[in-house]
Image (cartoon, rainbow, N blue to C red):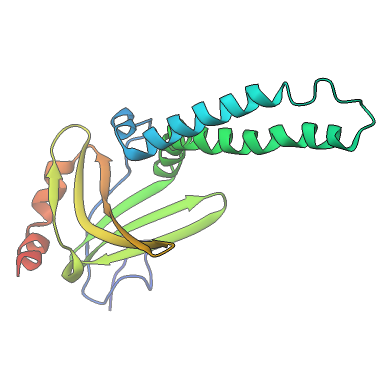
Amino acid sequence: MNDAPPGWEGLLAPDERILWQGRPGTGLIWSDLLSRETLMGAYFIVFSSLWLWGTTFVGTGIPRDAPAQLMARVFPVFGSIFWLVGLYLLIGRLVWDSFVRARSTYTLTTDAAYVATQVLGRRRLTRYPSGEMRGLELVDGRPGTVWFMREVLTSRSGGTRRTHARRIGFRRIDEARRVWDLMEPHRNGALQ
């Protein structure tokens, strides 16, 4: 019989034991600004700011009762949408990442790594089996990071197919070196 800790009943395999549990550090990760998303966000902000500035002149000279006046009032809304997208790409994604990390818990067991999140009333537990861990990497420091998987995402735009790898791991943890050492069996299994 499995003597699972409270809250883990029915989630762990019969011989699976918890080796480590922790929470990620919170706060914005400013180094994440060095990415393509930041450039895209800056482009969207500049483009939509010029759009919004330009639309301030569209309605001038049009009589208030003309049908074109409605279009002159609606046109800036589209620029505002692009401005908000740019704001998210520029800084909002960093705030969202910090928000999610503040509501996350990491667990390492003898068989897998678990990432639990509770965001906006939605609970999620994702299991990453040790047999599927590839590309284990330690980013030493305080806080440090232990990467243990890459998820390949594929998207199509027209006839072009793009792939993007997203790293998965225990981000910004105080005991990164200790977790790395506990993952020794996982690292050996990942090399086979």
